[in-house]
Image (cartoon, rainbow, N blue to C red; front, side, top):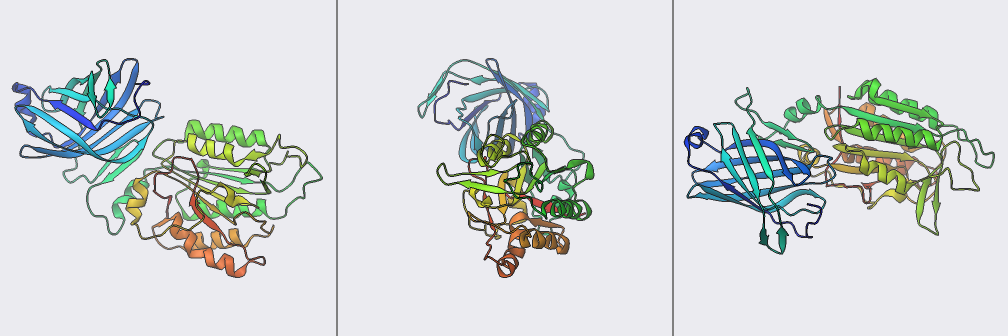
Length: 407
């Protein structure tokens, strides 16, 4: 599938043979999960179908085994002469280049279907040679009115959840990780030491562990780490955090903006003012945030020029429901300022922690949290400090938001 064209053919062709096992199936409604392969490549696939007489509607989710690419889209179709043709309607999420041919499936009893990809198909400029195998099993639950279906990076809730009870129950099963970095003392005498980062970092850690579902063993506090120590910790998170987990990253310390190359940097404790060798660029930070396969990642930075990592510098509207914000993966950043200096004694972190401690809602999005203290920072900062909130550029944000869950 590595030679796929740039277009994505949203057609799923399913052929059901009228044999005794077909009769045992009764209905195609439900969730079918399994594996598929194409040559040497293997994929996970989930098909959610709802049957109304001879009509079908639903969603398809397919993902490579290494999770480097995936696609999810809605489908509609009809049955005729034992064949179901389901056609994609619109993307709900997508990463990577895809081209999906038809699928031919034969039911095997009430809960299984086996078949093959129907290749050598050319539609809408998409041509895929070869044949691959596919195996699906129907998902069965002991709960008659099940409302949650979690498939890899997706979370589907099929009933109204106005009070957030369903989402609260689901989030309690998910892990919340935090990486808190405080750079206060620098080895290079040309770089001024700071007074507040370590104390601020400890206060933030305490607020998260005390008030929210961040377990102490999942919170890493780095005090005056070197660049190597930060990179090694990012590497560990890449191998630890899964696509159902949530990750918060906090940095307090010096930040520098290079106007010539339009790049921002964090300064680890071993940084030298005269050399960028030990500086940590926004580009590297962004690459790790993209590589860590969390459901949601929220970056909070309290440093000079921290707003340089943002794609947009406007706070997001809180008009969307919490549930809708959680469904889609997100890569967001909350910063103490834009492209300007900020003071060592930060009113940003002061009001952030106050907002976390004063919140009495079981669920609060990062956007709502930000808007609850944004103007306190503006009104009480000595230099007109304006905090920012937005998308981390080129980090695979899909429009969702980080959700804090109270204990």
